[in-house]
Image (cartoon, helix red, strand yellow):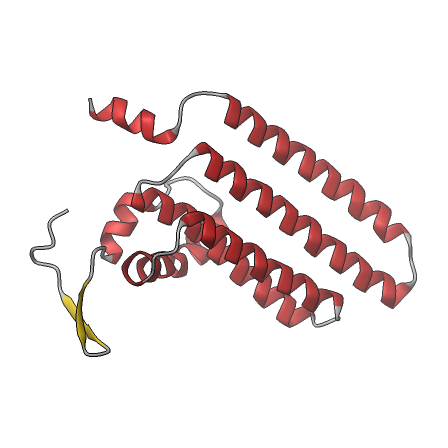
Length: 185
């Protein structure tokens, strides 16, 4: 990529080059398909997160996935402590960061099936931990043990289908970069 015509930013006494613009990120990294919540609400802020990560950090997409998971764990702690508003804010922040890791990997050309599976596994684990924390919180308030039966049934089914889909996706076809190379050739 040619840096000619890119604008420079003066930060901490140094000039740095902006490698990616917001428009380029939308063009190169944003999937056209996805849920309405992801496209309309989470899309624009996550593109700004990707802009910052791609231009000013050296974080890899897998590191962003781990950060997203950790924010999700903090949301579970907040839910467990009956701080539902903070838990909800942290969970949405976790989801916003999670939508950024895929965009970052597509932008940098580092998208792999292993990364997709790693992301999917941590997403499912985050869902399980948050569901467990909400169940314990509800149980502390009501002493109704059936909440655990409902939660484990729902999360088991979600995890079963998620992991089955990840396994099928991982076992089928070549890596994403190989598909792109074939298109170019």
